[in-house]
Image 1 (cartoon, chains in turn cyan, brown):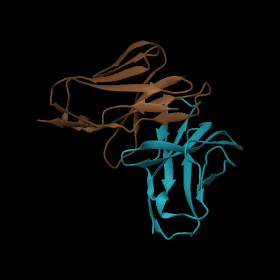
Image 2 (image 1 turned 90 degrees about the vertical axis):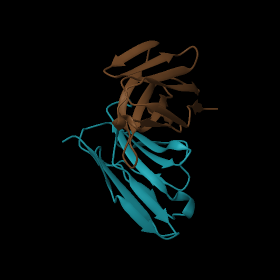
Image 3 (image 1 turned 180 degrees about the vertical axis):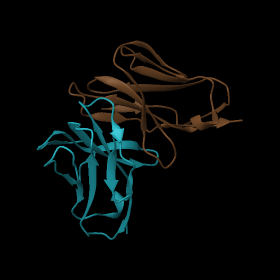
Length: 111
Length: 111
């Protein structure tokens, strides 16, 4: 089944404790992206990747890092999480930047 | 700046027709998407308009006017399951990698 998976689905952590949210797709898509979704603000793009080893900043990259060492994986790294990074995070992939397929989301709470 | 506007909430009656408007101002334009998002779930693709005009897909239609920076999503024969948020998004560069989302319109369908 073609899908985008994210792990973990739910995470509670404390300020400053490094964490990684994994994202994997099995559709051989070139393009992958991370978004955060907050009430009243909609989806905001954090980082995106056009292919292996090619990444670029979206609208809200501060406090986040990404890597794209393999085509199927695009992890999101929070080196030192802060409470303002409490949010719902979505990973998405597409063939060439068109229709995006979203993962199920990761709910993060930073205390 | 980059901006996408859509109404926050709309209410409609089962069996009726509803039109959700979206206006956009972006530095580039490659195409406009509509996604549906049920509460607690990931967004799912509904439509993609690149050229001006109306695209029809079953009960859903989407219209685009690039000169006016305007789009709408038309939902016919509303069903209770159509209660969801509808997200307007613009692919804002020629590569299609930078995507800007509106805050979404929450649609309530009542019996």
